[in-house]
Length: 149
Image 1 (tube, rainbow, N blue to C red):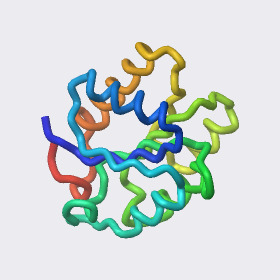
Image 2: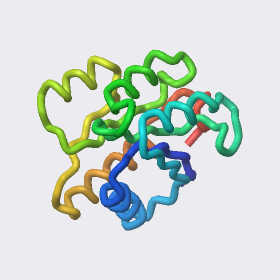
Image 3: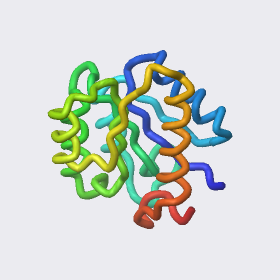
Image 4: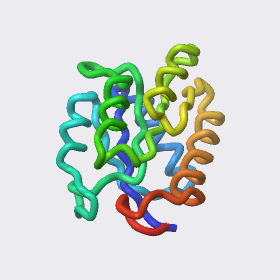
């Protein structure tokens, strides 16, 4: 299994720790770049490029919370999907909101998937494991991201 770079845009420490723990418990090892605000994440993504190395490499996947300080997740998603360099990167919305208007708005703005964070760790762990298996092992993404699986 190949190690990928994941960008996680999450301001809540407990939610981020649960995500990292779920990946670790599922025996998934990946480089994780965490950003706690939409502005910080957009600035970083603006410095990445296809074929870049290290911090300049495009991530294989972006996990995005909706409720962020500064530029919120809805606007971050819209900007990512409008940017020709970034729009093909799978963006998985991972939030506590199950409100239909949030789900619809995210898919309208190009989200590749929408996950509601479960309050039960075992269920959350299962959801993260399934997400990682699909997006990082089964799915084929454009070659300019991080190369072949």
